[in-house]
Length: 139
Image 1 (cartoon, rainbow, N blue to C red):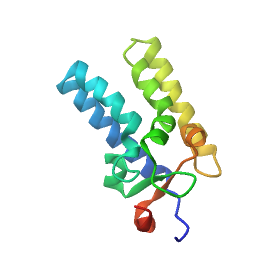
Image 2: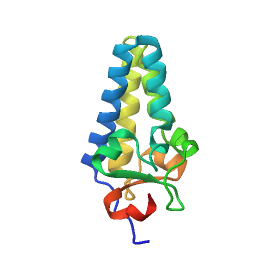
Image 3: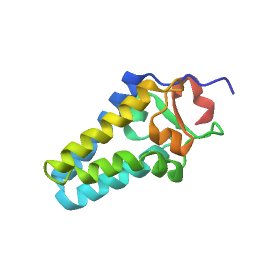
């Protein structure tokens, strides 16, 4: 397998934004069930479709494990615990919003400052995000 090319920051941010828009839409359509489904999706989304959440699939990205295989549901849960916590806290007015913005800011700063292009969740799960088009044999 050729060496996978790490996904760029802009592509990762757009892919996560697509996933968050899907969660917000689900929460608006079905307030309680949609919100819980959204939290579940954030947790396991990167373990679907061969290491691709819907946002990553649309943008041609893939999450790989430390072994170079597609991310599993377990690894997805570990890597997305921090953002899922942020979404849960978002339901708490003012204080929760501030904490959530802090959580997402922290993840972004870690990602930007990481020489390997990993956010805190990637470090915890031992995963990384690559351009899937250059890594089709891992799918």
